[in-house]
Length: 233
Image 1 (spheres, rainbow, N blue to C red):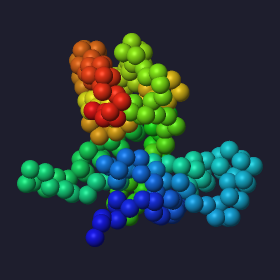
Image 2: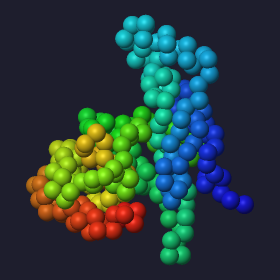
Image 3: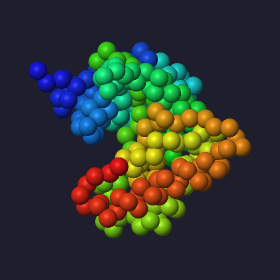
Image 4: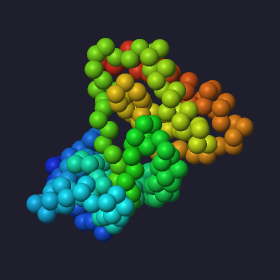
């Protein structure tokens, strides 16, 4: 029987704070079925609360959204479930450590959420697994960018901003795949923070300048000649 995780669209429920939320799950990339878009399903009561909430005092609004986070969520979110154990080279692999690291990095990068990385709304439970609730970026992947594609010079100018934003927080981005890039309103944002890590302050600038940024630029330069084939490394 086909794994239910690969079945789209489907209804999912996730628990975030005191809120149990129903959403319609749709794939972002079928190669990664544990990461998907969820369009929230709201009943009449939820719509009434959303309309009524702005009339409350600011402090009370904040309390409601903390206790019942569904009212702090946009209509669509990204759910990133902890990937189940899998076998690689004959060994069982767990992604729990990477999941915990990604959650910690989002918290550390709170001030640049929404500009350099997605917004992190919290950890939920979905279909029996720990799940990160993230903002859906209204942009394009490099594979789907509209013509004309970014030139090498344009890409170089844009990739530096998010890398330096992480550097400002003492962090490096070491998973330098082009598939981890989104183009949003003319700027580059980074997704998938599993391999973001801290580095000694005296090493940060050199690593970002000589490793991370050149690595992304090299990959993009190699990608452009085959861009019409649709593959992004």
